[in-house]
Image 1 (tube, rainbow, N blue to C red):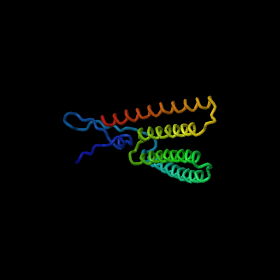
Image 2 (image 1 turned 180 degrees about the vertical axis):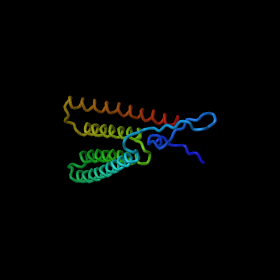
Image 3 (image 1 turned 60 degrees about the vertical axis):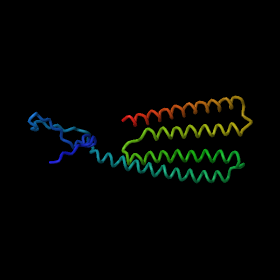
Image 4 (image 1 turned 90 degrees about the vertical axis):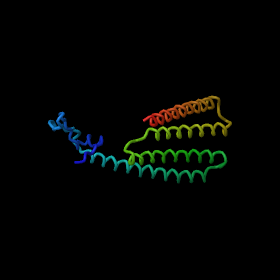
Length: 179
């Protein structure tokens, strides 16, 4: 009889019988791992259905955001500074939604959420905010000193967040390479 190496999921589902053997290889004691009152395959099925529903909702949100972005881009007056800033902001927001959607979809293929993808989403969100605040600082000359100082503080804080997240991505990638 061929021996098949069970996966960790088989152990959790209680589908594997563990056998304690003596030197003469005769099974003496059998132990089953008790898990939960619900079978694991049903929990996985419900979880997959829930993730599929989330993926559809995220896709619908991204389509709605794309439509709203186009409408706002057409209606914004004057187009040069305000429309362009709003357009870049909206496009980066849609990219964030699509990256979250990609992360949910990758949950189906890999079986786990990947840390790197969430870190990248954080970098995109922080850079989006830096670009928006920087553009508003450049184009609006009527800011008070307090508003200007607050905007510069926000940009500096978001820059530190980007550096920290990029460092976390570096650590995560190097940990994967060492395995």
